[in-house]
Length: 220
Ligand code: SAM
Image 1 (tube, rainbow, N blue to C red):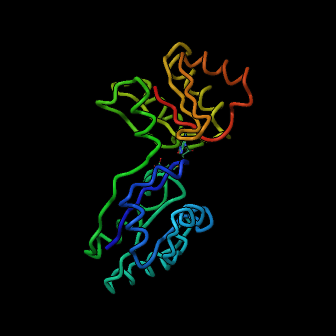
Image 2 (tube, protein in one colour):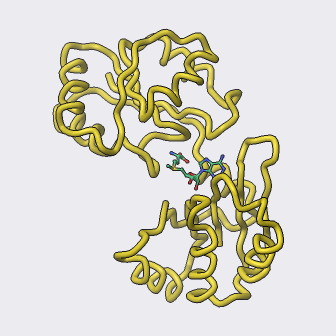
């Protein structure tokens, strides 16, 4: 059986009892980065063997995991943070597992998109998750499409490297007075949200360069 196991998006206390138990019971844990996950596994005293499985892992790595699963071994897939497959590696392995008729299950757990959305104050009945906007190709096409026909809350992931550029683009496509919520450092001690028009949030980060760090979820 392949278990898709979400892990904390920062705060180690956000592991579920079931996630801890499954990670302790499986034969192998496929981690996006074994060193990053090592901190979590050590914290919970989980001694299960690990291998790395990331976006550049080729077919050989997938085949190795599939071979184990075919020998009726249990494997858990985790990423560096949050839910595997959500802007993280996982899709290719899940596809292959389904193709081979191997049992799979997903545990509920942390994901930045749901955490940010649930406290955003924006409608969560319908939302469009875009993950990271493409850097070059398709960026303009996507921004045009979502700005011309916006019927639901839009959720975008962004890193410290591109937050200012993305806000600039959003101001261009949605107008500067469009309402926006930006969450940063979710589940950390200094978790913060910035709420206002796009231009007000741009102004905030310009005046507070110290806040342009870590990771962001943008909702509008
Ligand atoms: N698999 C993860 C999930 O389920 O949310 C997402 C991984 S993706 C590589 C990393 C991005 O998720 C970050 O750049 C940021 O946009 C968002 N993110 C993850 N943890 C976050 C946190 N603690 N605070 C704010 N955003 C976060």
